[in-house]
Image (cartoon, rainbow, N blue to C red; front, side):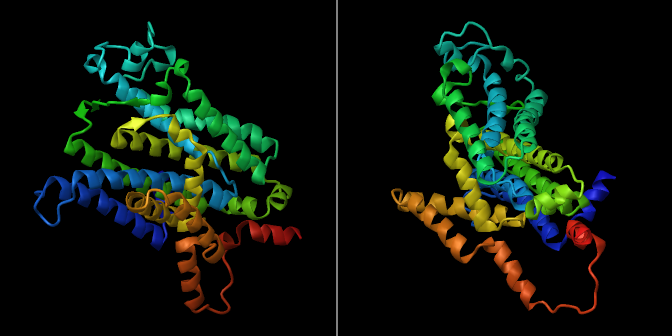
Length: 387
């Protein structure tokens, strides 16, 4: 039943995007593993790992678009959920090092031995098992989003005030994780990973598998997000975004819709962080930096807010440009990023995908006399009836 629900929610654009992601998930690893280095079709391992990182950023941008584009919640703290998912995976990877660390302790990670910790903290228990770490990747960001959203949405905190609070949340976590006595590696974070599920994390086969897993999870998340926004629930979300007071007046518990969407989005961001860490090889408190969360907003705006596909394209394009221009003009990249955001705001307010869709919509002939369906009317029809 769930599969049928997900498949019914797919339109042509989403289906094409999912198909492309699945093709990439198979094709890129094959071109990396099955072709020689002198083959013109060969994809080097470092390029595959780089694009794997871009795909994790795309998943993070998709998570933000779900709450910002369709629910009107401009979160400036989604980097915190991303980092928490990354730390959960990093803790598992650190437990897999065992006695192969610099100090040879079979239980304590190297940074704990260096800081004279005598025993493993209680919150590290269970992270020697992959299933437990994978569960925490979802539970920890989801629980934080639930607690934060429960108080914020019930208090009817909206607009710029909510954005400021989310940014304060991620900055508080940044300061906390910088402390050595927190038990997460302090300012150095966690690195020097060895294995994941018994496989060498640096091996070409493992990196190809991680790339494929990232593309598949992005495709699955896109399918889930599409199912949410195209359902009756999604119509109410749009009503909350465009006319929250009227939607509340019609009897909807707006805070419940916001809370559910916020928690789902946080879990998606946590998965992105968990996929990011083994491909990059490090996780540190810098991932909590508020600037990272602001960059996610830029990716989403450039690609196109409330389009689902747009944030994916925006994240890949902006980070690809960042990789190129930081090598050529390292002192001017931040100015270029700020200028890009200003230009998009002024000339492409709907982003790349939104502008293209608007242009194609104007060229498409409109059929006369066809009444809108009940699904298309959604909350707006109820609002008009109430008036």
